[in-house]
Length: 179
Image (cartoon, rainbow, N blue to C red):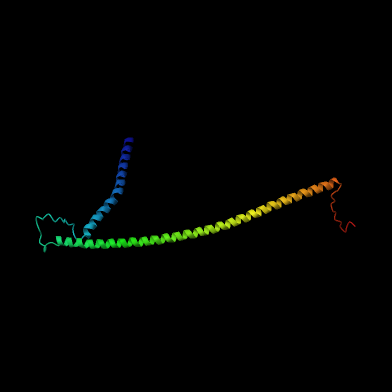
C-alpha cells in the first residue's frame, strides 16, 4: 500500500512538473511561431541574398520569376527611403515628447513655487499666532501672579485684623415674620 502511494505521488509530481513546464514554454513558443508565420505571410519580397560577387549557377528568366534581383534592389532603395522617413517621424516624435516634458516640468516648477509661497504665508500666520499666544500666556501668568499677591495681602490684613480683635459677623436676614 505504501509503495503504491509513493508511486502515485511520483506520477502526480511528474504530471505537475510537465504542466508547469508547458505553462512556461508554450506561450513563448506560440509567440515566436506566430511572429515567424506573420513575417513570412506579410513579406512581399523573400529575403534576398545580395552578394554581387557570386554568380548564380542557374538563372531564371525575368518573365518566369515574380521576384528578381532588381526588384529586391528597388525594394531595398524604397526601404531606405521609408527608413529615412521613419527616422524623421521618430525624431519629430522625440521633439514633441521633449516639448511636452519641458512643459510638464515648467508646470510642476510653477506649482512647486506656488506651494512654497503658500507654505511661507501659512508659516507667517502660524508665527503671528504663536506670538499672540505667547503674549496672552505672559499676560495670564502676570494676572495670576497679581491675583496671588492680592490674596496673600488680603489674608495678611485679615489675620492682623483678627489679632486685633476683629470678628467676622455673619449677616442674618431678618424676615417680617420674626418681627
